[in-house]
Length: 220
Image 1: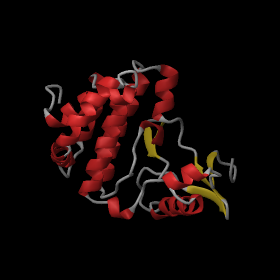
Image 2: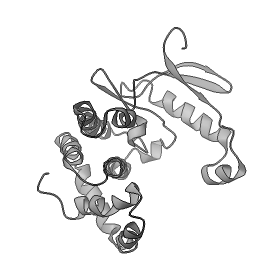
Image 3: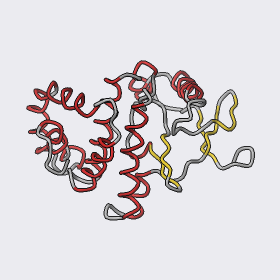
Image 4: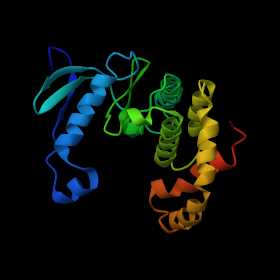
C-alpha cells in the first residue's frame, strides 16, 4: 500500500556478477525504468502511475493480475483468459498507433482488471523504440510469448492476432512479416534446434510462430 492505494514496490535488485554482466548495472536499470514510467505518465496511455518514490524505491499503482497469472490459475480454455489476450492485442495496436512501444509485452508484463489492459515492467522501454520497427518487434514478442505459453498457434493466438490487426492503423503486421522474412535464414538453425529441444514449450513454438508471419493463416 502507498498513500492508501494498493501498489507494486520496485527496488534496486541485488544481483550476482553473472546477472550484472548479462543485464547491466542494477542502479542504472532501476533509474531507467523509473524514468520510463515518468515519461509516459502524462500520456493517458495504458501504463500505471508512480504513486510513491524514494532514493532506492518507487511504487506503481496496482493494475490487477497479469494475463500470465490468469492463465496459470484458470487455464488456457478460460473465457476470461481469452478475453484478456484479445484485449491485450487490441490495446497493443492502439499503443502503437499512438507511436509508443513497450519493449517486451510478454503476458507477465500485461495486467487485466475490470476490462482494462495495463502494461507494466518498463525495463525494455526506450524512446528510440517508439517507431514502426519497435512496434513490429513488440508485436512479434507478444505473439511469440503467447504461442509459447499455449504450446503453439491455436485459436486463442489467432483471436489475439485478429484483435491486433483490427486496430492496426500503421500496418505494423505487414512490417512484422517483412522482418520475419529477413529472419528466415535464422529459422534454418532454429527449427532443427526446436525439434531437439521439443520438451521446452518456447522452442516448440518457434516453427508455428515463424509460419504465422511467413505463410499467413486462413484464420486471419
